[in-house]
Length: 210
Image 1 (cartoon, rainbow, N blue to C red):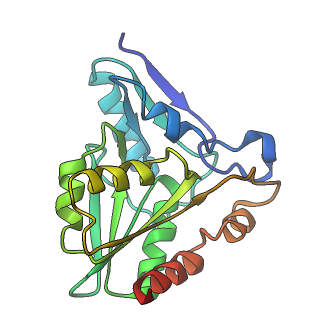
Image 2 (tube, rainbow, N blue to C red):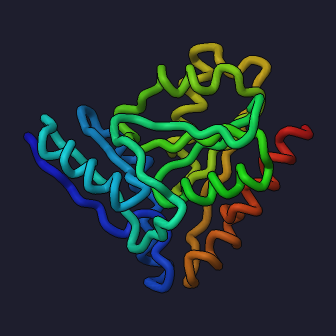
């Protein structure tokens, strides 16, 4: 049936506390057959996702955070993803979605010469287009405001491996792995989870040096 599920409090929820973090939804909702799953990164893309959801067939889920700073996030189309090159001759990439896309973009500005892929549709994943955007990349870092096991990063890494696309590439994941994040502001929690722009930039530099 055509049903639209508006999924509030996606990702970290700041001072609501450890019991309220929305960090598991991407892993299980993206695996539901026939579902369309959106993760807008701004109010502009949220509105577009709702428009698409009204026109869609079958179940649609739209995840969005409790709060978002859209000053630098920008709006991207909800049909799949877009990418931005920071610098010239980019051979490394950061992938993210939702609110964390802004941190990924700021991390790329710290590193320089980095391609940033921002996903908006998490299911079905636009894998062919993602593969095409990553084919020239030697080092790929996925930053995810959700759990690592079964998350979108692992799904993309698995699909690339199955298609023989990880040969001569390094792929790393920064996500929430085996813990319940505790109480605190989003800024504090992202720093603790090493998902701040500075931590993402450091992880990419370390990946490139391995």
